[in-house]
Every structure is written in structure tokens, then in C-alpha cells.
Length: 79
Image (cartoon, rainbow, N blue to C red; front, side):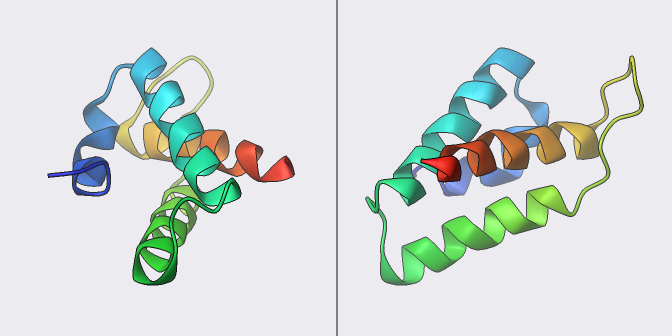
């Protein structure tokens, strides 16, 4: 069981833990600590999360949480 196996539960994470996980996920990719098949999976998860609709203002939805995860990960790519 690893971080990538946890992806299916990210939408249930509290906001703080989701932010930390997104940052970690993005940093693993940015710092080239994953490669080959694992890199493809990681990038697919980030892209999949970014395709989810953001939550409407003042609300929290599971798709919005996933979008936020994708944004936290993507912000790490700025390097």
C-alpha cells in the first residue's frame, strides 16, 4: 500500500491533509523522484483531478476537493 493507492480516498481527506498530499505528490514529480510507469500514473492522477469541476464558492464537494488536490500538485511544477 502506497501513496498512489491512496488516490481513490483523496476526496475524503480533510482540507489540510489534502493540501499536504497534493504538495507532496507534485514535489515527487517535480524533483523527479518517480519515473517510468509510476511517473505516468502520477501525472494521470494530477490531470484527472484537474478535470474535476471546482467547488462552488463557499461549498466543498468531492470533485472540488480533487480539483484542489490537482492544483496543489500543479503548483509544485513551477519549480
